[in-house]
Image (tube, rainbow, N blue to C red; front, top):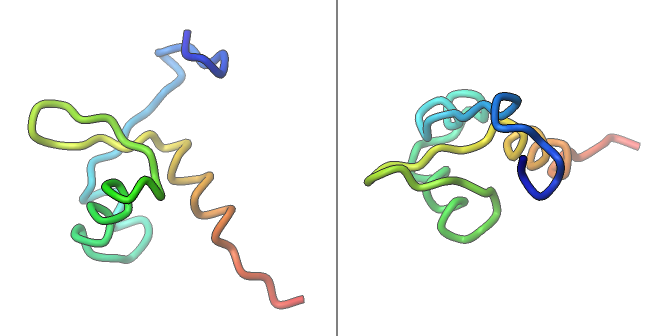
Amino acid sequence: MFGDGTALEDVSFLTVAEVAGVMRVSKMTVYRMVHSGEISAVRVGRSFRVPAKAVREYLSGAYVGTD
């Protein structure tokens, strides 16, 4: 269990390339976001894995409505 009550089997991770594809940005942009702390990630060896939940939270917080 994680601190927020999420079980390990309920967590899915995306590669930087997958996150870049979903967000339609470059991989370098995703790396900058990870290094700046804008989006959370886990380092596995020399690569990063981004929790799918972190991507959803980032995108929902970055949404600009047309109110």
